[in-house]
Amino acid sequence: MINDPANVPAETIQGFVQTFPERYVQVKGVKGVRVKDVKDKVALVIGGGSGHEPMYGMFVGENLADASANGNIFASPDPNTIMQTVLEVERRKGVLFVYGNYSGDNLNFDMASELLENMDISCRTVRVWDDVASASRERITDRRGIAGAVMVIKVAGAAAGAGLDLDETCRVAQKARDNTFSIGAALSGGTIPGERKPAFSLPDNEIEFGMGVHGEPGIRRMEMKKADEIVDILLEKLLEESGIQKGEEVCTLINGLGSTTLAELYILNRRLIQRLSEKEIIVHHMDVNSYITCQEMAGASISLMRMDEELKKYYDAPCYSPYYFKK
Image (cartoon, rainbow, N blue to C red; front, side, top):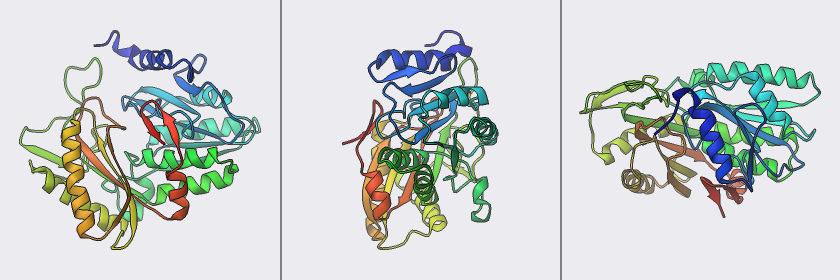
């Protein structure tokens, strides 16, 4: 139920800020969202392509991001959008960018950072590269950012909200990023507004492991499995790549990719709880929801964040947006 496919990102933002006018405003002239009440602290600005709602534009709020610069469907925001978004929320204490590790986002955020630095606005960047299926550990900076961005933004927002300076906020966010690992499984592709066919297709009886949130290829395709088997395969890869072992403490996220029901997500989480308990890995907190979606893609991902006392402090801090909050 849309109007012009080209207007979907802009109309989504308009509808969001009009629904919550007491909390949010649209950045003038661009596809950006910011908090209405801008605080005197390090600014956390996130962003990326539209089509993953509620990420990124709806992860703006109390102890979360101060603003989000948004592009078209699956396309990075341009440098001007990023700059204009920053200029509405920065308070001369610096800006931390957090976004997924994709070439377009990297290029445009870096360009915006250079322009902002020329205006004497200090910038730092944390690129989220949690997708263990997308590159080897030796090439970790080539990995994609997927649902682990939720956890990194949560920690970074709390660190900025606690009054840390720019370098310390960046350090904490990097620590969160470096301890976050994700992998997903897709059953079908998402449909881009205006397109007749999905971004990719799978036979009805097949599942792809390691698929990216834009339809990027995974690491293997096989016949459809039961939910418990899917979790076992994904968790085995996560533990192998992360090195998380018996006695360590983690936070977890089961993230739906768009068309997967809550019933399915909780069935997956049920198995995850069972397997982590058997492996004597301590669960600090579990989350189940659809935060980073892909235009009706069927499937889900699992994210693990290895915790310590510092990360727990910021992860547990209260935060609020209409689609992600902690008390």
